[in-house]
Image (cartoon, rainbow, N blue to C red; front, side, top):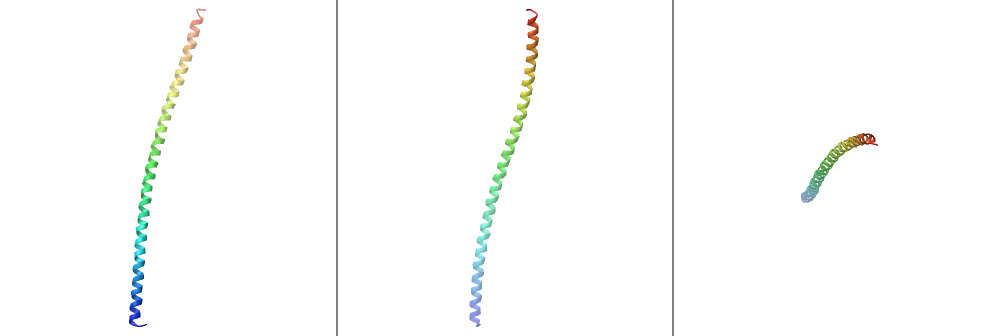
Length: 95
């Protein structure tokens, strides 16, 4: 192989290496863009999970409040039943 052929072969290899480097840079940019998209999606999902967590917490509080109201209603119902029984007994004296 002559010196000219060696230089041409070397030049060709340098061109190939340059093209390969350009492809690598392009792919690195693509990977970087994908990572940014994944990060954005992860942040969005995290926000959604936080909203769900808050909604579940709110439902828990409402359920506890409803339970307390049902217990109060039950106690009031029992009290009314007792008062009605006493009223019937009191009225029966006049019969």
